[in-house]
Amino acid sequence: ATIIGIPLLPVAVLLVVAAGILGFAALSFYIGRALPLRIERGTAVLQLAIGTAIIVLLTSIPILGWMAWIAALLLTFGAVLRSRFGSQGGAPLPTTIPPAPPAAPPPAAPA
Image (cartoon, rainbow, N blue to C red; front, side, top):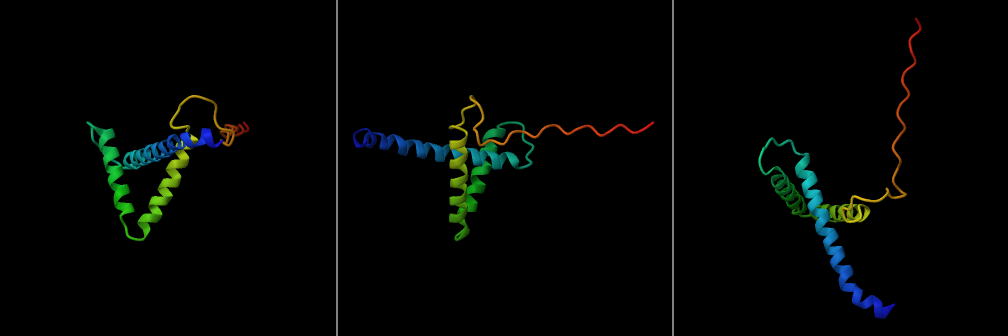
């Protein structure tokens, strides 16, 4: 295990760093997209920039900043792993809750 595991350690470190970067980019884009902006050109880039600015401002608060940083790191790292680094294919994970069945139509009124 050591002969095979030691050379793979840098690869694992790179994957963790990539997951963190992808997760924070996705969180920044999600926050920027949630804002009600009405801009026609460069919307995705602007949403990403505004989301990143909001995250930087929140994490620069003296005491709450590091707690927000750790919460965002755990949330985004888990989301990246859960989405298999953003892959679209494949069946849902077994822990995914199935969608609720459609609601039954109301009974017809008597004539």
